[in-house]
Image (cartoon, rainbow, N blue to C red):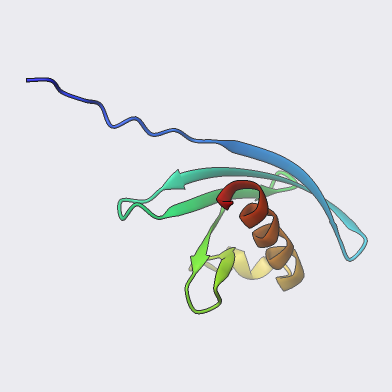
Length: 91
């Protein structure tokens, strides 16, 4: 019997953004959930990790954390990061 390992490859992207005259350094690592959805572990300026993923109602990549920490990210920053993730990693 030939057993195959389920190899999970991750890719980390680092990029800089400027949103509302504020420079941001973003580190994002893609991963797959058990339902095979691609999500991203995102750190902004060395922050704790936020989870980003596809939001079907919004039809875009956005922060999907359920915790209160995600409310600390300004909406324009979330949108800019989601756009970059879509263009850099999801395309």
